[in-house]
Length: 199
Image (cartoon, rainbow, N blue to C red; front, side, top):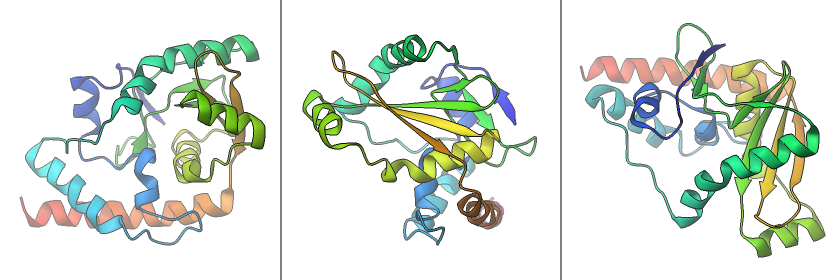
């Protein structure tokens, strides 16, 4: 793993991520069962466009996402306090020196773990506290982070200011990670070919 120390959501971070498949978008490459996603082709074109032009595609942002970025540190500090750990913040992690794909974790924990936080509205947090929180929609992202960083577990938390923190720990799913690995190699090869074709 190659760790890039920079501040996330800055021009420097954008430049590093430009045209690079990232774990937060791995659900656009594979489904939870490890088969190709219907969004794969569009994601391929987006990244090829970024590499060729040097400009990142404008990402969709809304008020909830902006609030999440603002409160990420609050969530991280609460998690650290509850678990008596220190979360290491990083900019971007590449799988290896080839720098073909990677992830932007919200933090790394010790030698074996990782941290991802999702800010949510109070009524949703209360519902999750009452009935539980399904994290299936984040499965590919978390397993992708585990592959990139080669860590054993990842804590994904649901945070809402003023309410208890919810933490779910995911461990490596080696069967899925193997399927993901195969699809990422093919995706990167297709991406490289597409970029070469139009440059």
